[in-house]
Length: 315
Image 1: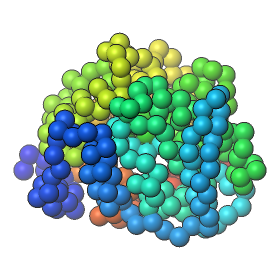
Image 2: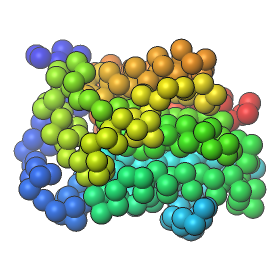
Image 3: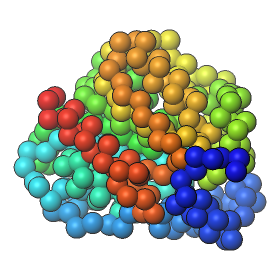
Image 4: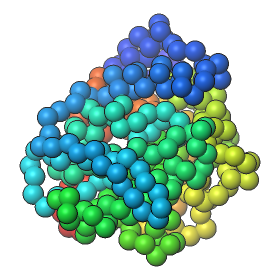
């Protein structure tokens, strides 16, 4: 076995997936990619759970308007808030795709979860997604109280490209002197688009759900110019100063091409004096977080919910 620690449930999932692989990204239009990928993403996550309420709203800040879906957990009160950015390489996924994921995470964490429908690439290049993510977060600071949330207990989170947006939203808020989230939940985040030459990119380039070829396509779809790859708001790992950022839980998967840059970002946060918990899930692959085939301890939900509860209870 080339990957001896691979969780047997993941192995079974990959074997089933191999029997019905969609065409490569390079052979499809963006619309076709979403039509083939979004249902698969949705089906991979836990099923939607009953929540107290769901509201679809428009968030506006700095001339930018973005769709936000609010999930109120079953135990409603003056709620902490998690502003969440979905994964999908900045090009795939939406709030509907993540419906089960978000309702379950809202209940598990006890947070009002605000799922952000940011603009997608390649139709909307950088910095469109970041501008939407930042606008939605700042809007939540301004309106949390009237929505039933606590503006003093707002966190951001995201997986993969969404993890990138969560990290950069914190960095941009600090730089701009705007309200900063009190916690960041970074799940298998993309932290460096300047190079795909780390060891994990070589070890897992073609074996699992997120391949090197897919990352190359996502990067070219998201960015307009090669120089943008080293922009700290694209590659937060390259930021000169990471001090003053909120505490973080950074979750990675052992068999993920992004694991090395996730580990490196956790290290840089720690060196900058930021409180960070780094958690590498053995035997797991990209997109394991919230996966229906796994129990809540294995798919990271229990860990994330506990960290959010602790961080936002004391904020």
